[in-house]
Amino acid sequence: MPIVAGPDLGFCERPWRITWGEQLIAKPRGGYMDNLAFWAIIGAATLATILILARRMLSVSPEGTSDNEAAMTSDMKVYRDQLSELDRDIARGTVSKEDADRARVEISRRLLDADKAAKAREAAKDTPEGLTRVTMGVIAIILAAGSFGLYWTIGVPGAPDFGRAKRIAISEEVRQNRPSQEQAEAQMPVWAGPPIDAPADYLELVDGLRQAVAGRPEDPRGLNLLAQHEAALGNMVAAREAMGQLLVIKGDTATADDFARQAELMINAAGGFVSPDAEAMLRAALERDPRHPYARLNTGLMFAQNGRPDLAFRMWRRLLEEGPTDADWWPVIRDQIEDLAALAGEDYIPPAAPETDLSGPTADDIEAASDMSEEDRAEMIQSMITRLSDRLAAYGGTPAEWARLIMALSVVGETEQAAEIYAEAQSVFATQPEALTIVDRAAQQAGIAQ
Image (tube, rainbow, N blue to C red; front, top):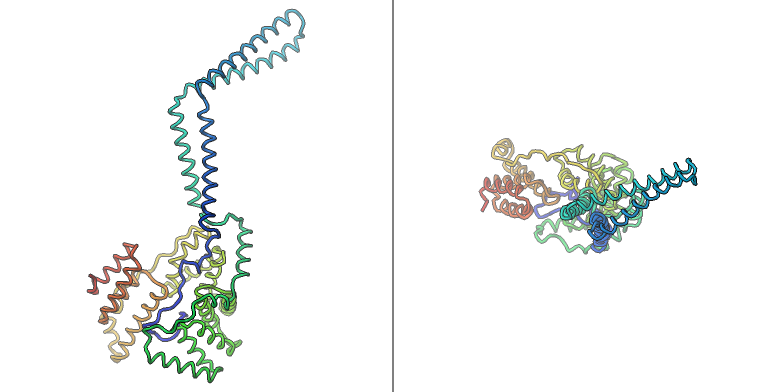
């Protein structure tokens, strides 16, 4: 059920839509200084490791080699002299054969160790110093680039370094201590009044509806209409209040749609924030219909806002894969679930967008409705255009959908509005050349391209 459940109003855009912004994902705690400190620590650790390796590899110097060689040569001479002295002691009979054998083994071991050290020093001295430095430089580059590259690939820069249990505990604390609906609404700007292009006669009708509901506050039909039309005018607090009164009147007969609708009105009134009160409405909707798409959509939004992208991702993934692909919430999820999956530590590729017919209602479609009266046929075509226009205004859409709207408007002769939609699409897809190609092609076919 769309947030604006009233009539199709050309001037009305839904005031809230799910976007990748402050409302959707709770940004990692800590700002620029925290990130700077993290990278400073990582950089210092990497540099220290490189310096230790470099010192070890470049420690052989001609002066040091000469001194060490002299010391090792002296040690080897001493050990050889000890072996000769041991032979003389055996000949004189001053040392037993058993003690002599043990002493010879120990002296021989030390002599071999000294000989190995001398050969290792000789090999190090023979290594070209330039090659050693180049090798060290290559190792340093690989170590630094590899470390940062690995973290950038599998890490989450800027995210707090907490274990899973700690992250869940923090998320639950944030969720329990978030502002109430009343507090969230108090932070929002006061309603500035209806859109400037709202028809005067429509505003008069809404004023009459307000007076009628004030005189009959227990009339469910009047409250339902008032909630719809206040939302259509962007007066979300009044819409939420009317819907709340309707829920009280309905009592146990309230449906999942009723609770989901109230949750969306609350989210709108709070600027996209899912308060505990809105969460209670979502829970009530899911208790009555566990598969309700909008209740699941906004419950996932609530989890994402409170640091549980893992739960949000699982909920949105099931909803996305179940479809249907022509639901107005489907492209909303598809466009954003990859970012959500990354925060949840998942490598996920969403289903491909369905192929979209760019032609919109063609002359053949209009001819197919020839059995209708002229008025009914025009109303049917206009309703198709309005629904698509409202959906793009509220949730955005694919380049193919923008192209379809441009073509549909041109078919019914509304070239001026088609040109306005084309200009808006050019702004939306300004940084996406492939998307602009699709929109430009539709504008050329419609005869409105510059």
